[in-house]
Image (tube, rainbow, N blue to C red; front, side):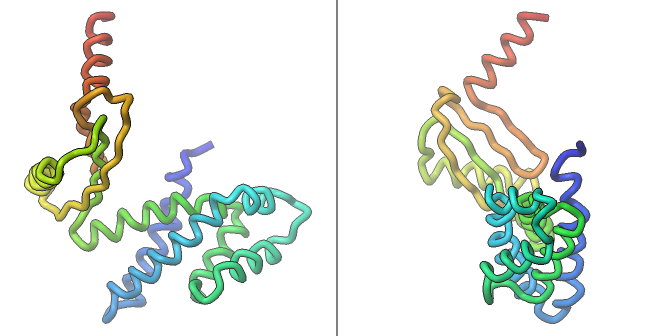
Length: 184
């Protein structure tokens, strides 16, 4: 089966283009609205009960759609409800987390920013985070939003992920590289 992001990409692109086209004067507001809707819907797409229902051929798709739409309430507009129906019709409701993630990537690119995940063995000081942010901004030419996470298994150093860029400066990564060179 194709990778989930590959399957989700056309939906995310379509939603993003629709948000840009329909919100010509207030694009940022419509992008924000879709961002919030997709984040909410991603929770439904990852919910084991919803996944089970959507995969059950004995449960009517319209009933599942109405369940999700009803649970989302007023936080979901007409276009969001249409997306739910489309995804259910194509058996793709469970792709909502990936659709949301891809949409956020497109939104950040449009806004000239990128989210960078910084994983370290220990909590980083504010000046360290600022230095990383400044270096990435210089390298990528975009505004950087840092999301920091601790992973004790790294032993030391950091791993930075920003879009397709991955910088592994961890002790664990160094040891793995050293090991693979020794084994060649």
